[in-house]
Structures are given as C-alpha cells and as structure tokens.
Image (cartoon, rainbow, N blue to C red; front, side, top):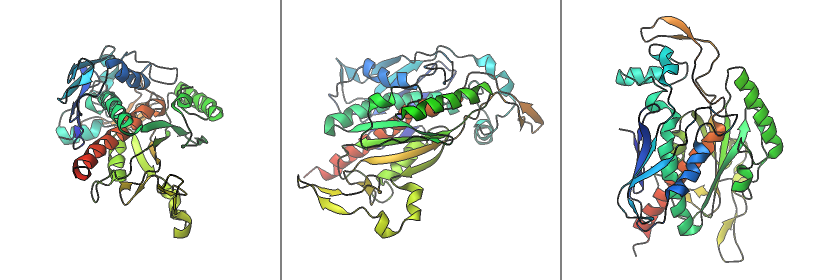
Amino acid sequence: MGNTFGHLFRITTYGESHGGGVGVVIDGCPPLVEISEAEIQVELDRRRPGQSKITTPRKETDTCEILSGVFEGKTTGTPISILVRNKDARSQDYSEMVQTYRPSHADATYDAKYGIRNWQGGGRSSARETIGRVAAGAIAKKILHIVNHVEVIGYVKKIQDIEATVDPDAVTMEQVESNIVRCPDLTCADRMIDRIEAIGREGDSIGGVVECVVRNVPKGLGVPVFDRLEADIAKGVMSLPATKGFEIGSGFAGTLMTGSEHNDEFYTDEDGEIRTRTNRSGGTQGGISNGENIIIRVAFKPTATIRKEQNTVTQDGEETTLAAKGRHDPCVLPRAVPMVEAMVALVLCDHLLRYYGQCKVV
C-alpha cells in the first residue's frame, strides 16, 4: 500500500522513526554483485543525523545489517533485507503532539486517512524512513557503475536566495563532500552554513534546492508512455519528505525560450556517436535517455517541525498553539543530497533492467 517502489528492481521500506528499527527489502537485484555492509554504510553516513552542527543532534550511527540476499560478499538473486536499528529515540519530546497537529506536517492528514497515527517522531512520515531508500540506492549505484560506469552526484544548489554556481558536467563527489552543507561552490557554502545556523538559533527553518547530475547514462532507458524516464525520476524524488518541486534540464526557464533557442541540435562526434550540442532536454527526449547527462533539480520546503510558537488545532478541533520540542534539522538540504541520489539511482537501475529485458533479448 504505497510502500513499494520499482518494477524489476523493487524496494519495500519498513519501520518508524521511534520503533525498533527501519530498513528495506530489495527484490529483483541481479546475482553476483559484490556488495558489503561497509559500502552501504558510506551512503548511510552521508544521510545520518548528528553529522554536523547544521543537522539534527539526534545521535544515531545508523549501522546497517544485511540479513539476507548476500552470501560470501555477493548478491544471490534472492530478496535482500537490510536493517538499521533505532538507538536514540526520545519519544517524550513529542508528548505535546499526541493531540496537537504540527502545521504543515503529516499529523492531520495521517489522522484523516487512517484514523490513527504514530505521534512518536512522526512515525512512518519521518524522514527516517529514507534510510531504507539510501541503503537500496547504494546497491543500485553499484550496479549502474558496473554496467556503464554511471555516476550519480547530487549537491546543494540553493539555500533560500543563496544560489551556487556549479558545473554539473565537471563537479566531483570530493567537491560535494568537502563541506558540511554539501555545496561544491565554497564561497556560497560558507554563506549557506551561516544562514542555516542563524535560522536555527531563531528556532525556525529554511528550504532550498538540490541539483543532481547523472553521467555516462546509457541511451535507451525509459518506457513511454506512462513510464517515461523523467516521469519516474520525478515520482521517485517527489516521494521524498519535504519535496515541493521538480525540474529537468531547462525546467521552467525553458518556457521563456523559443523552439529555435531551446532545441538541442544533433551532431556526430569523433567516435561516430550521435550527440547534442546543448543539453536543455536534461538527458531525456521522448521519455527516453539520449546518452547526455541527466540533470534534475528538486525543491525542498523548510522543515515543518520548528521551535517557534505557531497557531494550530488539536485532534478535536480546539484552537491552540505549539512550539515543538525534539531534535530537528533547521534545513533538510545537506542530508537530502544522498536521498535524492538514491532515488535517482533506483529509477535508473530499474529502467536498466527493463531495457535489457525488453530490448536485449535478440
């Protein structure tokens, strides 16, 4: 019921923020892929809380355990189960939210849909659910790299009105990971960090934009008409908590151009490959990858749970106020980067298997 994603490379995430743990079951992973808990842990460490002064201070190591599907360091082709146990839940910090709805959070809508909700840390609506996605994304990244040396690199492009200048065709993971805000533009990174710290001291929050580039993408990924590659990527990243917008290539800026300005003209390179001179399409045309870099942007809203007092209502409709306690990110963007990368990798891995299944039989 909405907890499974993908067609051939399928993941099902499970768990709540303050339950015993969270994790993922991956079905459809090809056999003989070399993978280890240490490789998955690298990605989880980029997502985990408490990693810097601008993230939530919740102290979780997010140590992963592979429970099935891997034998002697290689995938077996059977379902892979990965578990991360919760260690530092403080449910008492959420006692005020038993009856009171947080503005712009999922409290009221979960009650409206299910008639019950886990108020401890937001339960299933917490971004802690994304641990399973990031763990599965680590395996998807490995498969993509094996097949075509595909690189998936995300970074913080914008925090409020502070916008970085980044060349997506040249940016490296080392540049992204060189600072705690994960912005490769170091001048902007310092300003972003200062802004996040300042807003956090006020008990408030801010949002921004994550940009993600995928390089060495094989041609032919994507299944028109309803499973167009960019449509599935959009669904994947927009299923992440706090997302509010998606763009690919020129995005909304393309609406200001004429066709002659926007069209990506073709040419044949020195290796005989058909290429495009520009990449306003963002790596897809007609819902199918064209071999150029896929470039997307995802907008994230300010974190909903803040310490500033706000007007709200209780479950019974009684008007009241709420100044939330607990440990929360003043800005989700630095930790959202590996989440975006994971969802993009999961979509591409799924479409890669679908491409081989349909188009490489004869």
